[in-house]
Image (cartoon, rainbow, N blue to C red; front, side):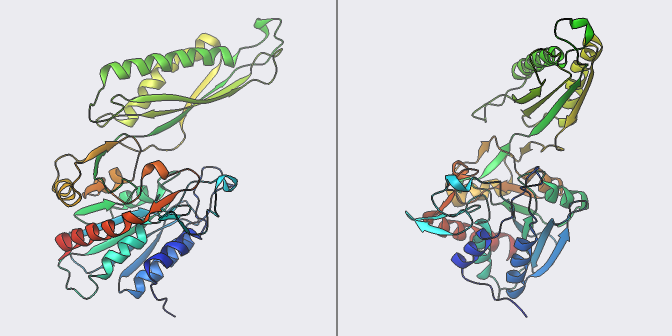
Length: 382
């Protein structure tokens, strides 16, 4: 039995009510299939051709490709179906229930970014009985907040094909044409435990890690001297030493130590080259301290994104009245760009409300978003 597509606020409430957290910690991680199936049912009802594509090697995770019309080219309206974990006790309302107050819709994912789907669908409704010359594609992806496995799978498959793409991340409806990349890496050192009264009895992983920290700080200084982009508020690549764990008692030589760090490269900096440079700097420390030292990526990383002076950027600037900007956070844009799409990031809500208690979407963002998306669909699909 078909499911009727409801009105906008009902759609938003039903999506928020589904726990679709994605997380590297298994206890938090949830399937996104309930969100995907609900969106597919609504879009089926509106006449879209829907395809649910499981993400390889990620059970319970899938992308949705919903297409209205046919032919080459066309416009993709893209969003991710997952959210970050949440601290329910810090919310002033149930995070999994849509709550209206202060001219805002509160709920987990209201702006980042389940809220984009009802607005994209609302804009699409205007064109259901029109003869589209190029297709309109609504794309819903998995695991953006953890591994970006959904967008990676699409890029590897080279599907869907389109000419233009708008990713509806919360940007306060300002077009974003550039962002930094993201690398999250770990260094693991295995030494040898022993009595602290005689250092020769062991090999201190903490001593070796001290040298690793010095090398990484030195490398950070070199990167910031050699790379600069004034388009970004923080105009240099950053390397944040995020967390460190090692040892178990003051009177034991530390046998193991782990460090995790975050590196945000500028456009033009290659992730693999950065990893290789770091590995070359750190490898000699293993012999120097008599330990084993391994470096690993916590996830494959997100490339930087740059799309200056494209047609879509210029159109978005004209429609919104905002000049295109750069941001430090990562998105799925480089993966859609890899598939040949002229891509921008632009959506309702502010990134300032994302990833924190009492996330909300302001009422005054809704009508302007729908209006801009309608104009984009008319331009690129009619």
